[in-house]
Amino acid sequence: MKKYQDHYFKQAKKDNYPARSVYKLQEINKRFGILRPGQKVLDLGAAPGSWTLFAAKVVGQGGKVLGVDLQSTSTDFPDNVRFLVGDVFEPPAEVQAAMEELAPFDVVVSDMAPKTSGIIFRDQAFSFDLCVRALEVADKYLAKGGNFVAKIFEGPDVRQFAAMLRERFVTVKNFKPQSSRSESKETFYIGLGFKGAPEAPAQDQIPV
Image (tube, rainbow, N blue to C red; front, side, top):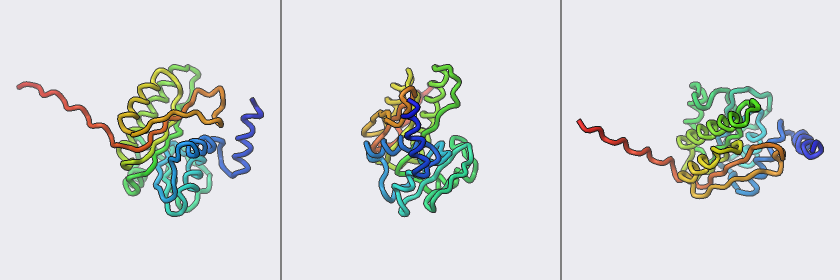
């Protein structure tokens, strides 16, 4: 098992990526073709920057990638990347302005995960909450026809999240990359072909 894990860790160092997680997005992209040259990409929970770097490589100089995370990173990014520190769910002015300037995005990706407590149901619930909030960001900033990727911990809330995605996307898939650790409870949900956010149900009129 250690040899299996070390392979991706060592490969990331060799390929100049800050974390092994890059290969998860690489596998997702190879399987579902979510990224293409010239696209604009929003990367949520971007630090230390492996997904941002990979997305920047695929979209090329004709594309742009905005990475946002609560934590800073020392990773050097190419010219087509902007990395900002802040809470994407309650964005400071600089983050808000950057998102609005680049919107609509062709792709929104989220590798966010809660700080694990070891209490499985608690961690799963927090993971679900992060995914729902990432989807709310996509509702606001993702272009029609765009793609979405989010990591979620497997558990009872996964079906509900999948149903939310099916309301919004033409095609919904779930996928566990080979580069995920076998003992990890993570899986990735992919939404292809954004149809738009569902309309809020009309409130019942209260008789006067």
